[in-house]
Image (tube, rainbow over all chains, first blue to last red; front, side, top):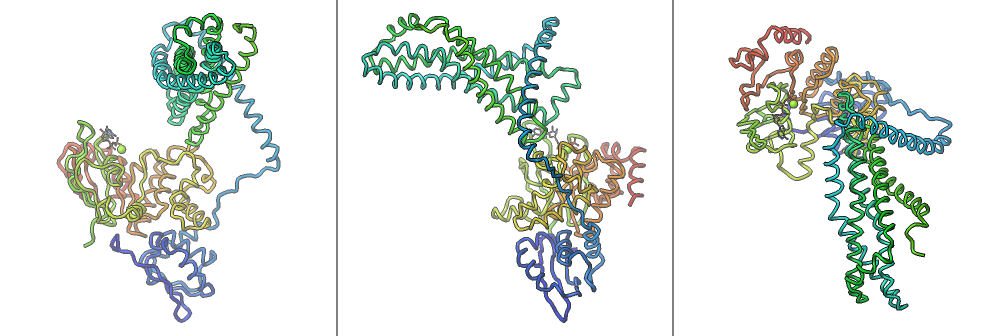
Length: 372
Length: 258
Ligand SMILES: Nc1ncnc2c1ncn2[C@@H]1O[C@H](COP(=O)(O)OP(=O)(O)OP(=O)(O)O)[C@@H](O)[C@H]1O
Ligand SMILES: [Mg+2]
């Protein structure tokens, strides 16, 4: 028996027309000097007589190295212990086993063009199906009110709403300060200081608040939802749910959609409020406009309709983010690569969808709440 | 006398308040096939994880190839890790790679093999575990439970290890494949003096392979001896595990198959 840690160096020598190998021909012994061994072996190519009597150990890797060197044929004369011959036999028995080449199709360029388009179509179809399924489930739940997933709803509300308050406040406040500061510089030049209230009020409440919060929530909660559903796919937890007769739409998707539909408008109000506070602080420092005056003027220059638009936007964006996140989460294939790809796609698509929806809102509400 | 390949001294493992091991001592000499048996939840997997350094025991020392597990420079530790292969209970294949790349991965990490050498080595490993070359293109999610086990074994064998740690390698294999697995391990052992630590509940495999059996019960190794002597041990676990009529029949079958 060879001691486990003793390692004798593999050696090659040629004596009287016989290649003599010595030492350990194992992956561990060979790998530090593989390039040199390949070269040395190459020099003794034409020799037909090999003596492996001095080889203390030969593993499959060593045998395959020799076998490849012998060009898949046994040398004319080969002297080796029977155990070593068995290893060489194994290398020989393998023959020319090769990985089948992936099939190449002559239509590949057409596929390269068409596949993304078909993928887009399948995304849209699946998203529609998800929405439809949710509609059916909602109708079903109205008949069976005891099945409402209220616990999950409240847990999601806490995770996506309450937990998001600090970060949305921080970002909102800073944006408010910056916006107010930059506007103040311009307004001062025209002596139009008083319009800071209009700019901040309209800009933040109607546009910036909902979009800003959407971007934050998509990055924060959307990605988390996709990753959670994705991991449940990878670990077959969703299949386990299905076998228990529990609908994944009712149990996993619906609470998320409901939670964001409720949490987002509240977050929008919260973040807009803090942003206006930031703007007020900056306006007071820059232009000397007092808090009292600012708050008094705000309702007169910003019609209340803008607040309703903001709340509606929040709810719609929330539903969009949750739907997109769940859609991508349920598409995850059971491997880590697909999980990361879908999580990325989820965040990017959610933000894009929100901005598209915002444009739709801008057109649809162009006559509402804008003082002319 | 060479140092044992695996040496555990006074291993204590605690998870919070639960004590899993309380003074485990075990020495496994080179060339042995030691089967670790014990009830479910007795800490067999945990012990394997401690041997390979995935888990640090609360107290006690693990020595591999005669040296403490975490001794030496970084390069030495990497070299030590390449001398053993582990088959995880759940397979633990890389889900983003196909079967071929899973097995090729440790070989490529050596950074000194050519693509041809890697290819041939992987093909040989696939043949060893009786998989077809076509299976090389499958993703882990497209494999059956038993195939996952076999690919995981092929990956554990990729670096031609001297020590093989197998956590329930035959669970999920049909009897034919279990017998093939037994033959494979025996062949590898004859070639290389491979040392194997095996966790199994499969008495056929146990009887056919083990040169010794270690019984893990009451949070320590009760005994580590040949199967004949272990069977005679006077302990309720041994009684239930080895001395029922079905176990005797299974072991007889295993011994026959050699
Ligand atoms: N990370 C952990 N945290 C807490 N407890 C753990 C942890 N890992 C294992 N345990 C506990 O340690 C004990 C031993 O677990 P282990 O997985 O080693 O069992 P096993 O002997 O391999 O069982 P089986 O035969 O069922 O695979 C169990 O009681 C388990 O609950
Ligand atoms: Mg286990």
